[in-house]
Image 1: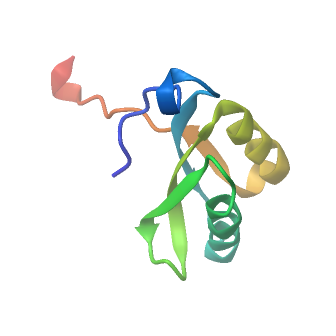
Image 2: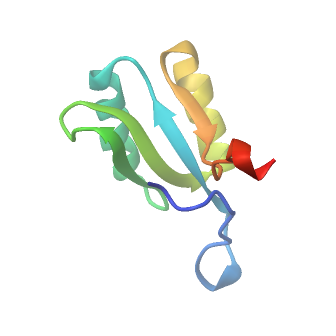
Image 3: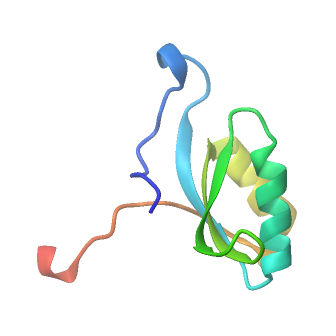
Length: 93
């Protein structure tokens, strides 16, 4: 599982704030393509949360909110990009 969704100000507390996101879709080939592309970007890390490396369905990605917004805009209805938040259990209410 991806770590909690709290923002990280980066090394030494400077630089863009990095958040944790879940990125997924129904097309594993598209998710794999996005994983490869994101994994090569500086300041971004991606790992498979669900599926396999060859056929991922959900990625855990550490990236800035701006990068997440750009990914959402680029892939619109083909990918879901959501902030990774801690699970709230019904028993906690």
